[in-house]
Image 1 (tube, rainbow, N blue to C red):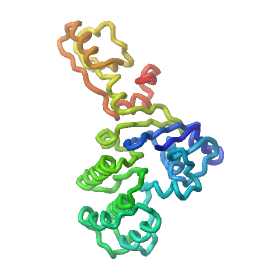
Image 2 (cartoon, rainbow, N blue to C red; image 1 turned 30 degrees about the vertical axis):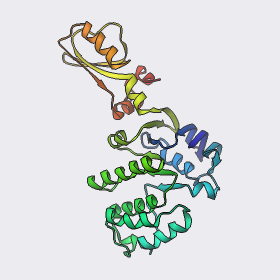
Image 3 (cartoon, one colour; image 1 turned 90 degrees about the horizontal axis):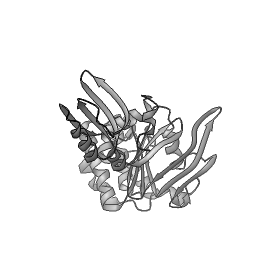
Length: 293
């Protein structure tokens, strides 16, 4: 659906994107993660056609996004900093969106008032940050975009509304085949909704793969006893008698080899997205740079 290849962007002497390649499959929820300054927001501004590529390509189903109104009309974007016309109400912004997005669903727009419970005629600039974020979802979901691009989408929302918004997004993916690109620092929430993940650092893509593949091919073994033989150990640490090993392999293979060493205790656990992120970027050791590759 969305394909970014060999994308580079510089601001003066600073290279924000360095030969970035990113692929978001159709009808997938893709989580884009990385430390501050990794280039996530710059990548999103290219994906939505705000920035012109210096080198490389940004394609939405093989069509360039930059200066392409037909492609942009298929993309709904909620940036980290929300912008509305200064004196516009939600109803007035709804009419504006209806003129921009050909698949804008007026009936869905009406129904979402029951979900977000926002005032129709209050100027949006007088709403709180959380209410403005809800208004952005109200408008963007009503537009029925083929591609939904979200930068820190639930920042400013309370826990109940966060869950409600994520449920609406997943329902849109399931019912309409919407493709979603989410950039967020909340790795725990991304793990609940994403089926593909890309990890960026210093403007480049370190790793992108389905979350199931990431978590299925490498595990955490906690064990009290001798280190089992025949394991491909990527990292090892200890706290007292308890050893924690990052091991490449399937869970059943690791369990079989761990049991053969007759430990006093062992447990095989999947790596969370946060742990994958830490091992990729935390500089624990050179060995963990090879995790899942």
